[in-house]
Image 1 (cartoon, protein in one colour):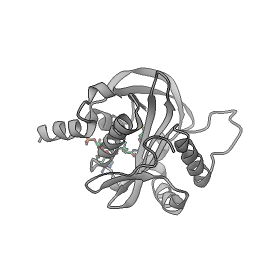
Image 2 (image 1 turned 120 degrees about the horizontal axis):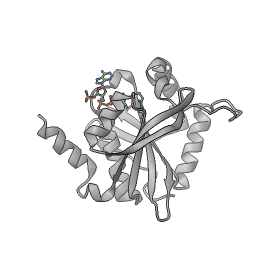
Image 3 (image 1 turned 45 degrees about the horizontal axis):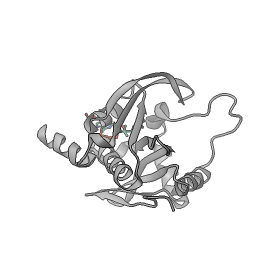
Length: 201
Ligand SMILES: CC(C)(COP(=O)(O)OP(=O)(O)OC[C@H]1O[C@@H](n2cnc3c(N)ncnc32)[C@H](O)[C@@H]1OP(=O)(O)O)[C@@H](O)C(=O)NCCC(=O)NCCS
């Protein structure tokens, strides 16, 4: 097994656990209700990829395989134990890099309650302290104000802009790149984020 996987993380009513093929029915229900909410931010296959997007079961199995090989951490985000979204660490690079990308989405019915920033902080802390990563990156379309609010709450640094960075919603889309390294949060990202949120009260 890879270091730090499988993992269960929690803060209050918010939890994270490994994705499972058994999540398929609930995942399909949530995604069907949230199509318009998620489509503008969803990864799509570039022209010439020559295949249809894989089913949830195939994707979940593949993500779990990657996790066992130390290349990703595919979490289901829960609220009071119920699935409400996903936080996915992918593209882990070891060697002298020790970095990874992070993506997330939440059911619109649960949006706006600060669930995602808390879950992302839990995952980044886990990656830094247990998995042994040094740097986490998040790429966000400039139009995605809700996602920009998430990284702002967590104090991730904007490092630059990447034209046509990812194939999203049917085309190559510009992205803003955000990152954080372990040295920036010696006491943990969740602790720092909670402190700054409380000082705004
Ligand atoms: C981005 C996303 C994960 C944020 O999750 P969240 O748990 O709602 O995060 P927060 O509660 O911190 O809210 C973030 C912002 O969403 C907006 N928001 C607030 N209430 C909302 C509601 N009821 N419904 C929709 N958006 C709302 C606000 O802009 C908020 O920022 P603010 O707190 O500074 O006002 C969520 O909006 C989402 O799943 N969007 C679609 C998928 C996506 O964009 N994924 C990220 C790709 S980079």
